[in-house]
Amino acid sequence: MFEYAPAPESRAIVDIAPDYGLFIDGEFTPAGSDGGVFKTVNPASEEVLAEVAAAGPADVDRAVAAARRAYPSWSALPGAERAKYLFRIARIIQERARELAVLESLDNGKPIRESRDVDLPLVAAHFFYYAGWADKLAYAGFGPDPRPLGVAGQVIPWNFPLLMLAWKVAPALACGNTVVLKPAETTPLSALFFADICRQAGLPPGVVNILTGAGDTGRLLVEHPDVNKVAFTGSTEVGRQIAASVAGTGKRLTLELGGKAANIVFDDAPIDQAVDGIVNGIFFNQGHVCCAGSRLLVQESIADVLLDALKRRMTTLRVGDPLDKNTDIGAINSAVQLDRIRALSDIGSREGAQRWSPPCELPDRGFWFAPTIFTGVTQAHRIAREEIFGPVLSVLTFRTPDEAIEKANNTPYGLSAGIWTEKGSRILAVADKLRAGVVWANTFNKFDPASPFGGYKESGYGREGGRHGLEAYLA
Ligand code: NAD
Image 1 (cartoon, rainbow, N blue to C red):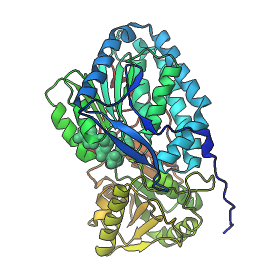
Image 2 (image 1 turned 180 degrees about the horizontal axis):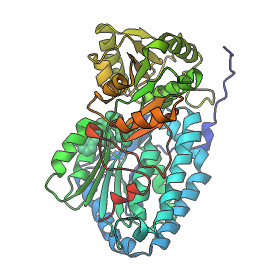
Image 3 (image 1 turned 120 degrees about the horizontal axis):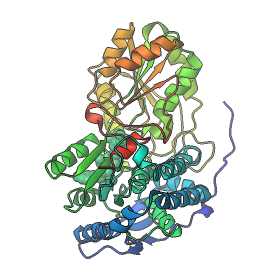
Image 4 (image 1 turned 120 degrees about the vertical axis):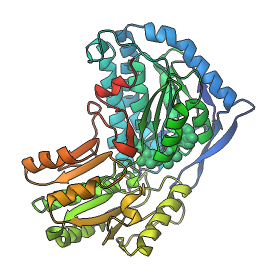
């Protein structure tokens, strides 16, 4: 393997303040007396990046009231006028892309190559895309005069902080709703920089409000009686609690939850291409991806060849400093998540699966986990059933297409799946039988704002992205 000299991206481009307040009614304000503060750290070094306000009940009231006050005039604006704000936000995001990419890598731990080349371009594309819809809602297929819902309470996770914000905020605003958004407690910074971008774009106060805080703040927001729509992305466990609390209130709800996707490789697949797709499927973003291809289903006749090629490829993955442009795998987002990954991996070994990682040196400080595969996994293993949300792949085999479909669908989740084969007819036949919201063929983890995304079964309901994504924000 080549030795690469370090190629660090400069962190000087981003100016992180020592502390941040809540963004309510167009202003940053400290949390009230029933709120608090918490620290956000760089998971690659455990260095404290900033102290951030935690919103309490009175702050949630203030933010929802601000969004309510802003709603009549925002929703009454002609769509073309709302579009101008969204286009402006999209362009500012592009202008500040390098700064935001460095910030995202610092707060989340993801490699700069991904935040720069995947997250940020998709964030801007999402705002451009929904800006285009704002004046065409009457032609979107939801009736001649679709109306916004009111105030949207939105809660997002830490794996793609700014991208999940874009998925939530862009369609909500395009449709004429106002929003109160709560980012995850381990990655609050890019949402706070987005608040600044809203000000830079001249967005009227109260249209976007950002409340930082932990799960309690999220619960207060989704349970707030003056919220009309709840949009949640996160774990199935919390999604279940939210569904129960929203039931019977008349609030509209979309849930984007966990996954345990099957990545199915048939014996006629181009092996090298499939290997790269498997690597991208499970090691992209340290495997902190709800639609990660975390279950590899490989046809038995090519299993040995494929696994040898996969192991060879894994030895070339570089784990380390997220700001180094050569890094493939960055830091695990938090100590809590690292513990979860370790615990489930240990269970995999105890239950008899064979564990393998390439030799790789991990930094002394920060939260790290080497890319790992488990072979000899069966449907009964917990690592085949439960979401690990880390760089850990479970490998199972199959003999016939029917067996592959049966195994792929044998999960409580249904977010995504992948198929690798040379035959177009097989792609269509298998995709048709997979109970998954997104099925990729001869590729994996490809996203486009025009394409809807969402789950079946315990992966949630409702769609984000595309024309379908408008439906969640229109009456
Ligand atoms: P999590 O459910 O613990 O937290 C997600 C968000 O919900 C955070 O902002 C958290 O503060 C908040 N929260 C926690 N308890 C809450 C409550 N009772 N009420 C309201 N909000 C609450 O999930 P996580 O560990 O941060 O994220 C990982 C999970 O998210 C994984 O299961 C992953 O699959 C899922 N995810 C799904 C998608 C998707 O589009 N389907 C995308 C990304 C992540």
